[in-house]
Image 1 (tube, helix red, strand yellow):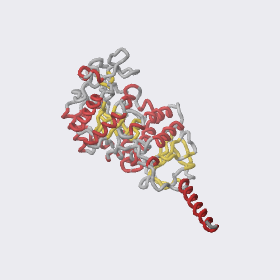
Image 2 (cartoon, helix red, strand yellow; image 1 turned 90 degrees about the horizontal axis):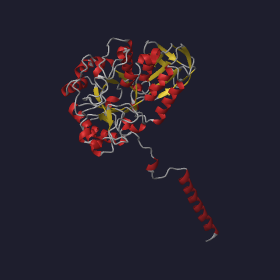
Image 3 (cartoon, helix red, strand yellow; image 1 turned 30 degrees about the horizontal axis):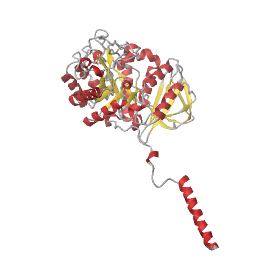
Image 4 (spheres, helix red, strand yellow; image 1 turned 120 degrees about the vertical axis):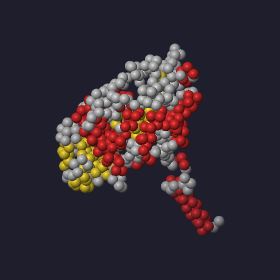
Length: 465
């Protein structure tokens, strides 16, 4: 090989080595490796009608003097006007007698998964309620108790192997709790899973219900729920709400999970036990740890809180309206427990008859106005359809929560005073600039870094574009 040929050879080798090094370290490979491609975490599809949906929990026993499905049906036009989309009926099934608590027992002590509690009416009455709701473009979900049954559910005698046992080999209530009126099921049994799945499918087929709120969902294996969701969706698109706070449940089983930590945080803040920093932690987790498609259920009451602890008026006092505003204009699918709109001031009994005292009340007017905004302002829609909350930094960060939710169509700028003192704040950072209309006063004005915004004690400003 002569000198010229040798030089050419090494030039070619060097070029090849440089090309290989460049390909290996700075350029994408020609063939994409699927191991490094992001995969969607949520694989279920939310029903289209849940985009801007709100939820209303119905305690049928206490909803009226009659305590019947027919009485609920008569109130559907009022609930539609309030802005309700989804009615969640507490368990509708016959209640166990053995080891019953109180006179009437807990609706969460189920004696027959295929039956209707005669206290509430008949199967035909339930069907009529569902048909009437659908005629108003409303939807009905049933409360489902999969974790346990009443002691006198026939399953105990017909299929004793479907139940968990204690250290003595006896049937047992859920461990560590005082749920003495129920006994736990054992989801290691395939035939129990089949039975429970068929029972849930029955109500979708027979009564045309639209999904379920699932009691203590985290006590039942996730793979059971994921299979149930698939079988239910084969019948019709359903909405599933889990009484649990877990990201895992959103992947293939549930549209929505409880945001207990949101409730606990705002309760502590308004009662002087925490600062807004703790709420920032909640929203950081919501944005960073949960998928965008996850609906988080936010509300200031439910049957547990109202029956055993306190009413919203007792829990939040003068701050109640501010917390309600955050529950609707902040991230989450908002809910009302029946009676909130009437300013219910008493704790509803759980095991006895204790009907709600209905009246016109400003709380109902506030919910009605907020839900109307949620329907028309796409930034406030649920899950992936809505806009992310972006924090606006202000001059009173430990007193005033301020944030923007904005997409290509709509924008909402909210400021909520979590203190008993009037606050005058200036805005320091964030996408807050623009001309707005105050949703409650109707006033229009331009907001800039020089703008001073005044918020009354435990007050709020909701600005829209």
